Structure formats: C-alpha cells, structure tokens
Length: 335
Image (cartoon, rainbow, N blue to C red):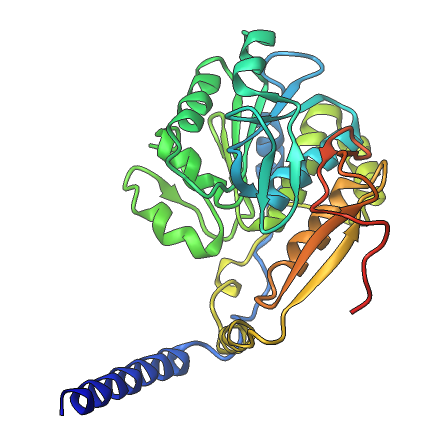
C-alpha cells in the first residue's frame, strides 16, 4: 500500500510539473519583439568617445581581469583579440590567482600575470580595466582589485554580465548601466543603479557597461576609436568583417521565446546525442575567431568545443596569448 501511495504521489508530482512547464511555455512569446533599434545621436556618440578617452597615458595600459575558475570565453578573449590587433594600447590578461584561467563555456588560457604581479609592475594602475562575466560575481579578491583600480583612475568596463561584478563593487551606485538581457532584473535589484534600455553600451563617469556577449565587439571598437581615432577603428573593423558599430540596441527584442525554450529543452533532454567538436590550436591562431566559434558551439545544449594540439604545450595566439589545448592529438578523430 505504501509503495502504491508513493508511486501515485510521484506521478502526481510529475503531472503537476508538466502542467506548470506547459503553462510557462504557453505564456512565452512566439517570436522576439519586432521593430528597429532607436538611433543614436551624433552628440551622444561624441560624448561616449570623450568619456572613454585615455585617462592617464598616451599609449594606454589595458587590463582584462578574470577569476581562474571560470570567466566567460568571449568576454575575456574578444576585447583582447580586437585591442591587440589594433595595437593602440598595451593589453594584458590577468587572473586573481596563479595558474590558468578556465573560460566558460570553452577554452583555457594562461594569463600574462596575476593581479599581484600587475600591481607590482604598475603601481599607478591601468588606464582601463575590462571585467568579463565570472562564475562567482561576489569574488572578494576580484571586487577589491577592481575597486582599487578605479581608485587609481582607471576606467572600468563591465562586459555583458560582468556588469553584475562591477555592480557588486559599488562602482555603479548612482550611475546608469546596462547588462545582458537575462540579468537585467538582477541589476535592477541594486536600487542605486539606473538601468538604461535600448543602448548596447553605456558610459557614466568612468564606468562603462555593455549588453550581451557579442557587445564586447562594439565596445572594443569604440575603445579603439576613443584612443586612436575613427580611421584606426574602421581598419580594425574591416579586418574582422564588421561594417559598422555603435550603441544601437532594441532591448525588447532580447527575451525568452517559445521556439528558443523548446530547442533548449529538446537538446538538453537528448542526452544520447551529444557532440564534441575539435578546434585545432595552431601558432598565431586568431583570438576573435576562436572565441566566437568555441563559445557558439558550446552553447547549443548538445555540443561542446574542445581544442587540440600535437603537444600539451600552450599555443601562442596572434596577439601573444597562450592557449592550452584540452586534448593532445595530431588530428581530431572522425565521428
């Protein structure tokens, strides 16, 4: 009798969860909101560029900081790849502790230095500090270091959900900001922060924030333009296949939709149909392309990108960053 009651209770719970899940799916929109993003005035663009001018050095020093146990792949690598390619600043990747930085959802890199080593070499601090999304948004060491760099006059740039990390330092209090669409409500929990919709990047008195993952591209190009002018930024943009960049954004177009949710659920449940995709690490590999491919193929809920090389030694990228292979192999085995 007891087992029968338990079985019926279990079936009842499953049915209830299915009903709740079905109702949730039914309530989701069938498609993203339509409509063009609002235009950005020339005056606003000029104000953004002026606010991002190098605060200290003619050739600025840019630090991209992450925690060792998971910082977001594109947030960390994309700004580095674009800024290193532009060659208008000295760009360093940093970690809070010694050792590699594991990026999520893919890749592992050996940063140039720890934050302690950076502080010893550059006691006056960086001109810019770029903050990616991190698996622990309340990491005390990272928060204290970011805050200390702001105190030394650095412009702090929170990329994507890195805005939540910056928010936890208190540096966004009393300022305008944006973040990834999924984290807007989290940002709004900070009552002192004024969320700005319909802007892909927002700069307010020495602190900048961006929307989702790919917003690191227009932010990096805007930074190049602020440092070295429009012509240099256009040359870099052409090099990576981008015709234009700006702060235009339609926030309402980014939300959960029913097709997206169904795809994510189906791919997650299809545990028998998982893929591992091999990305060959070669000397001078381009960080921009690698970040986009590795990130995209590791976010399908059924595939994961893994790097491989003939040896276990790190491979040095185009911009001088050492990337560690996930597997040692001369070639990726055919499925």
